[in-house]
Amino acid sequence: MVNAAGKFGPYDQPGQARASVVGIGQARALPLGGQSGSDLVRSRIALRVRLRSVRPGDRLPDAGVLAEELGISEITVRRALEGMCQDGLLDRRRGRAGGTFVAEDWDTVVALMHDADEAASLDAFHLLLECGLVAHGSGEAPAEPLDGLRAMVEEMELADDPAHLAELEARFHLDLAEALGGSAIREFAADLLGRLCLLLPAPQPEAVREQNRCHAELLAELGRGATDPAVQAVKAHHRSRHR
Ligand SMILES: [Zn+2]
Image: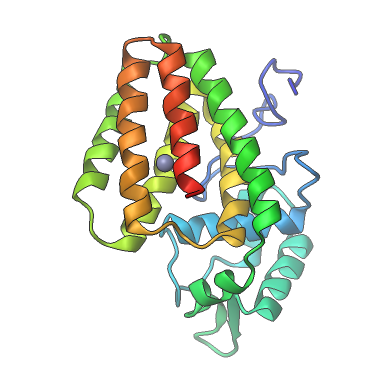
């Protein structure tokens, strides 16, 4: 969808703050199978955990702050946080050092939420998004963000820590979406990836390393404006996720 500002998605309305994944600015739910405000809270918190901007045991910002960041009402945020506490994803602690915390056993709880069918449909949508972005941006992608993505590929080659690898894998796809489609498309990708973070466990290091070869190939093909091979690299990445 194209909004009044001629941009894809409901973002970047005149006078509205730019959306951002990691906390500042506003983000709004996309009409992707109707993600509710509550789902948006869940998926954005899940994405922050994957990106390690909050970690298990960390205290979350207050509901009012999250409401402001996500551009939704505080009452919706409170309800969503309550639901996440009931699911065991978050812990509420009372008292002076109280607040809402990411559960220490976040990964274990997420593993129990595994939903292969829903994950497959979101993943298929993510593949379409990336193929479209690559076809659209091939040969026109600005050099600087591509250099940033290449640096990330190198970092992934050297990383050992599974959580760090999973973080870099998510970051790569968010930065790729932004490099090829701008900040609104980054938010669109963040909606998909955040939801996937709750449906699938974090990828294993061997899987990320295999995918990273596809990342390197994709960047090389994008750099020389070779659209078809670049799209093939995106598809190969997708296939490796399903092995
Ligand atoms: Zn990847």
